[in-house]
Amino acid sequence: KAGVTQTPRYLIKTRGQQVTLSCSPISGHRSVSWYQQTPGQGLQFLFEYFSETQRNKGNFPGRFSGRQFSNSRSEMNVSTLELGDSALYLCASSLMSDTQYFGPGTRLTVL
Amino acid sequence: EDQVTQSPEALRLQEGESSSLNCSYTVSGLRGLFWYRQDPGKGPEFLFTLYSAGEEKEKERLKATLTKKESFLHITAPKPEDSATYLCAVQGPPLGAGGTSYGKLTFGQGTILTVHP
Image (cartoon, rainbow over all chains, first blue to last red; front, side, top):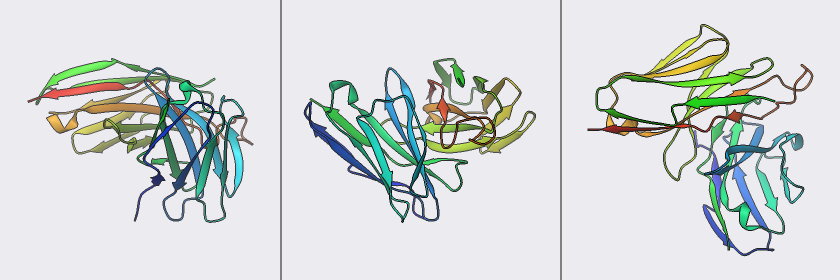
């Protein structure tokens, strides 16, 4: 069974731009969670989607948003990028919000 | 607020030298405790899920145990390929059971394990 895939793997953007990251969960998984990983803060929860509905949201500003499609694929968007948004963005899927399986991540660099 | 503290921050072992990593947690109603392994530049790789105190799980040279306040990851006779960052995470009760933890894992800062040949 194929694992979680994320595209693109690497992105370089400049301050003020916006970015969209994509995540395809494991087949049959309905829950998708997003995390931001930085050396200083570690892994921090952004939000979770289940059956196209956002069920939970972490403590991030409104510039961070997401959505889920009917095939469970998910996207997250960051608008008005700041230098501090440079991080590894990880997507994880689970069957019913239980054990989460992570993708390889998207490395975002903001210049 | 769920909290997870891992110790030590870094651990250096000689090949074959067994040791344990600690994960202390605070959560109101543990739904699950998870161990992951992460290699540099990659996403976390799932190792174990533990649900209740007294539970133990094993996989190759790794054994995870759980009490009401902490979890241990025991590494027996480690090899250089076991070198990685080991992450511990907890999930609290979901909405409708007094919590807001749908899909949310709270992670510790990790233990960086280096095994020298």
